[in-house]
Image (cartoon, rainbow, N blue to C red; front, top):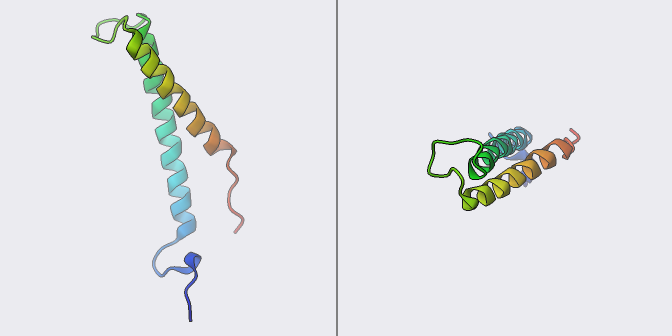
Amino acid sequence: MAVGAHELPGIDLLRLGGMRRWITFAVGVVLVLVGAVWVLQGIGVITGSFMTGQKLWFLIGVVAFLVGVVLVAANLTRRKPIS
């Protein structure tokens, strides 16, 4: 008898999908927070670092922030699989 992809012994793929969802959400939140700090350092609001006042860190922060927003938004709008 053939085993379907959703019937692999010892692996609950639905639970793996849920774990992947939480990891993606957590990475997105971290990117939003780190990106915001880098943007604030890049524009000079947060001082005391080699990144303070550097346009490069502002741009890197904007990219990190936007990627984080996309990950969080995609995660929140994704539908749960029907059991």
